[in-house]
Image (tube, rainbow, N blue to C red; front, side, top):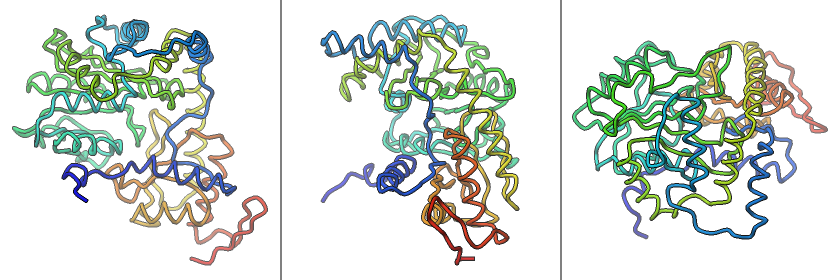
Length: 405
């Protein structure tokens, strides 16, 4: 069988693979605790459901414009005005099948083969694969000071004549780090001076903790004309707990949006009109659900940090936002893939290996679940790893005996 070079270079999504394996184990009846998932467990906003149901009831489910239905584009324009203090026009907006597709289509619109895209590490697992799908070269940047907080110098050192874009995700998946205002302002200025595209992946921008204020990239841009190469990507998946609806969007200059829309029109013909109606309901409805989720996640983070603090040798920088902790488990195993498999096999706790995010020896742990899931999951992990733990553990009626230390 003949497979393309690009096809051969692409790895499967580690997070989606984990979700699939966890679902299989759960279906078998195994008492699995999923600490690897990237989706909130709260209910979808009622207004999203009502909006969807209303459209379904009229039985007129037809093609939608490739760049999004007018109602959704209006809602995104209002959202951009409210949360970014930026007034844009419908031609500056493209709705898509999730923030992931918005980024993918953007990369397809701007990248030529062998051109480079720079992004800080740790990074979302899909970034390098999406760049490779476009024939580009992914260039992760590791902060020189060893933290999760990059500086402009880190970016500058890897820029070459082949660099086409910089991609920033703050607060960050998987670390939860919110990059400094100084860094974001300097990156905006740097990309403008160098003529580089700057893709801001803002999918978690409303899930911030400890009283932190959102950063607005437009505040630091000097060029807000139609020549701007600033692209802001967002969606309803995280803040509204609507991961399964697959609706995201991009805001950019009109020419780029036109090209992105042309590409998307041939890929999917545009997002489902039913799911777009749901996004309209969420964006236009009461926003208390977002604050409720944010408060829950902040509390869950505190509980997870407290329990992880009982491990000897585990280092966990306190997340500033999102719903992840990115913990350094090299004290127990420097191979994060083996460690994650071990925890799933021995104590039925699902985590995501840090190597998938560019950081070997780390595990990404999700705070999306219940307090019970978090506490019991971490307790199981500690029992499996800590040589001072008792030799026996009960998971439900199942008695486990530790015979591997």
